[in-house]
Length: 98
Image (cartoon, rainbow, N blue to C red; front, top):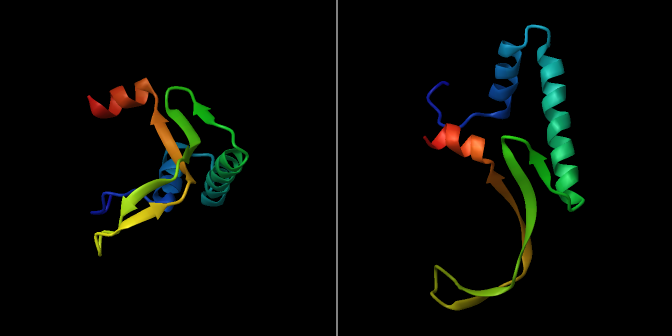
C-alpha cells in the first residue's frame, strides 16, 4: 500500500469495497463509522468488546504513581487514569507472528 507502513481508515474502506462487489464507498464508509461508534460507546460504558478469533478491547484503570520529568530529571506525581487496551486472541497472534 503506497509506501506507508500504516493503513488508514480510508484504505480499510477501500479494501472492504474491493472484497465486496455489492457495497458502494458510502455504504462501506457508513459500516466502518458505525462499527467504530459502537466500539467507542461500548468502551465508554465500561464494557469489554470480544471479537472471536481476533481479540479483546477493554478499559484498564491506572493507579497513581511516581515518575520522572524527562527534561529536568525531577520526580513527578502521575495521576490515576484510564487507558484502552487490546489483547489479541490466539488465532490472530498465530497468524501474524508465525
